[in-house]
Length: 158
Image (cartoon, rainbow, N blue to C red; front, side):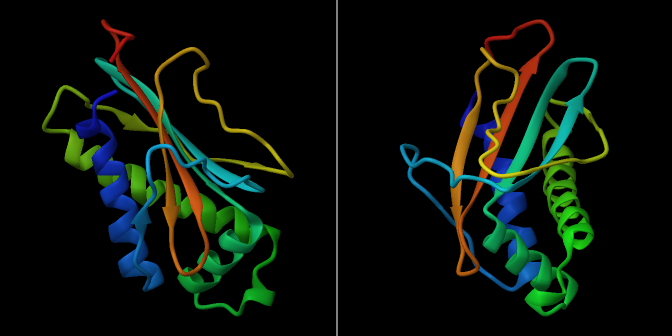
């Protein structure tokens, strides 16, 4: 995957975090692992010429702090439903931003509804055997992971 395909997802996170959460995001080094998640929001990217997935994966403390900031809640007001809805909304915003930016390239796609995966120590592996790109996202609310996989239909090596 080229950095040009990954970058709109990163920029979407940076913009979403700034506008909705009031925090800055620092992108970790390529060699850094993403934190062990307790909740992940995933969206399928499906198009005539491109397909893939995007996932944002959060440790519980980070997810609770981010959802509370987004909804204007106190942290103790974030229940499982709010955590799930907020995680889905964040990944939806980021995927929508990237979709718009990538629509001017060969990567045109539709978004599925977000899928939320929860539970201790789950591991996000998108389309095993395919190329993915991951980054650790660092904020004052906690670190989380971004994983993106995308390929042209006629070239799975993208």
